[in-house]
Length: 179
Image (cartoon, rainbow, N blue to C red):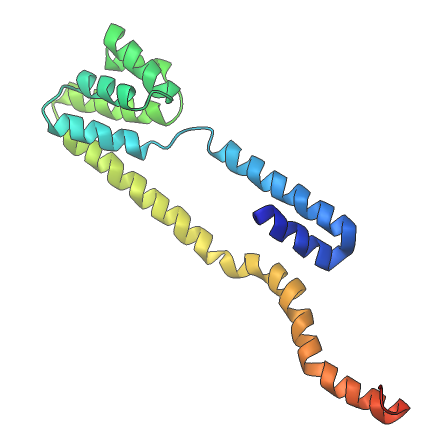
């Protein structure tokens, strides 16, 4: 549906080449969304870890349960395997991405004797705050991003709406009735 809208807007603005450009823009947007979603989100993993830790499981047991819950999360599966074999501190060095931060926080809390559930809850709250900050920053840029569509799509219609009746009246006065 979105491709039809973009192609129609391109067709209205620039004809057939605009329609092709609209479809190409839609394909690029889809590709961009897929690239951004290459790494699965960390918050569901943190929620499962929190539930498992609150139910009395150890950090390793909670990590294994989270890996079983999310079988498609390769970093989590790798972290679970390495932590089972070598321990949490060794898994921190092996695992890339966002899971590295989670494992380092868990390993630090486990070494210091801090409550693991409180550590995971703090990570969830920090993730929520970062997500909210991203959304607020994106919302603040909305007026700037809407300037081009408003200028290209609404402004010509408003100009026609305001000036067309007076232009038609002027043409009728200069050349006679149009019918």
